[in-house]
Length: 360
Image 1 (tube, rainbow, N blue to C red):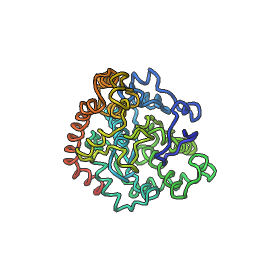
Image 2 (cartoon, rainbow, N blue to C red):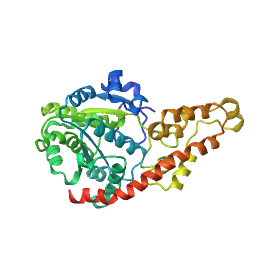
Image 3 (cartoon, rainbow, N blue to C red):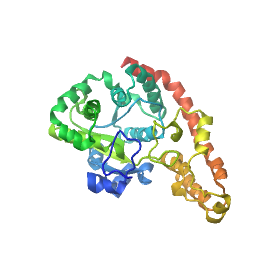
Image 4 (cartoon, rainbow, N blue to C red):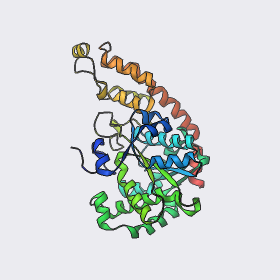
């Protein structure tokens, strides 16, 4: 069943993207924005909506100071969903010279998952090493743990006067007080780049999955009331689980590809992924497959494939020349090759990640 609303803490919901524009006021990615970005994720429709991205781009092009903000809840290792946000973060940092604010949301990991701070610290080191291996320039970034950034906690406390129980219920539904406060802390994270210590009000872009829009709407409402610049956002579609259901979730390790999976585990998961092929070899040879249902194609489209590779995969799936197993044997090695190279980079960057988090 498709939710009418959006739950940022759920891993089971399915989102009807077509309804988000009318119901929640998102803007579509028009040709002007696509031309300015020149980003394959936008051109493929994976980045599909935004709030005030045009204003952020205008000020970036004019040479005004802009920032991009994101973070991760250190509840498990990086997976492909985490990587998607990281790829966007790195893109906006490199192309527009935007300073990155990156939050390790260890307080939310405690509030939502009950993970003690000392336990989430080690996961955070691993997560940050993944981000550095994906290309983040730490010299143009403020990287912090939520539990240690006093400005975020102070801002969350101050902003609480702008929130009412009715407002929180309207945005998030009935929740524990800990999750309501985690939401206030996220507002503090999103608006931290506008703190006087970082130069005051400015345009801040937040790349998120569509399921995280409640946090963006809440932050924009608080920013308006506090006379700050309302944060901009760019939204990506949610990659499905390897089983072809809902979104890739940390709560079901078999459904996700982790960037820390061994190559053998990754191979097994990808070979067992939901296929667009037919139920029998006879049907496959007679009808061909449906690439829109194929999870290997979706993984390549979101993360690893060039346009020419994607076209070849489509032809392989639909041409009736390859059976499902043959198709997977042809394309899985490309993902494993990337994963092996990434893990080597990450290994070299682990000491730097630990130093950043323990000496900041």
